[in-house]
Length: 144
Image (cartoon, rainbow, N blue to C red; front, side):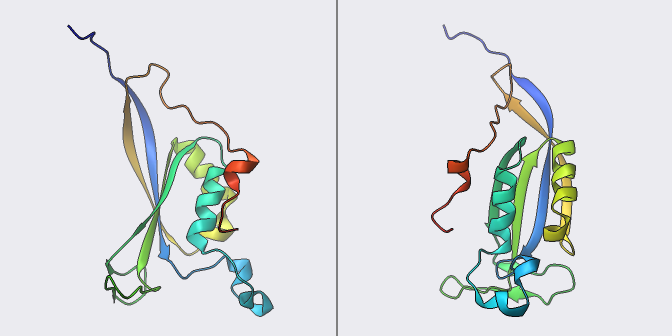
């Protein structure tokens, strides 16, 4: 007979940041730096989240049709990548950690639609989520 395990619950939050895939870091969007290759803003946000202790997961979700803020409605096709389509960067962690992340990265997030949602994390581990700080190797990517 299998051993019964108890499920543990923990309050956690989800932050959704809406932007477009073509957006770049605000410090690199104008002037002569716009000609230099740079990562998309959503990638920079995810790298910043990885470097932040307490953010459990950070992912980017593409959309197929929609709008964000005051921008026009955009559509896409599987064979045609539309850089104006909205994109959602989703971060999961404790509310305080997510709030501190937003304050620390105000320059990156300024003017973006940002939503917070309360979630509940379920686990069979009594210690809950184990989040370790990112090492230098974790922060480097092949796209750098």
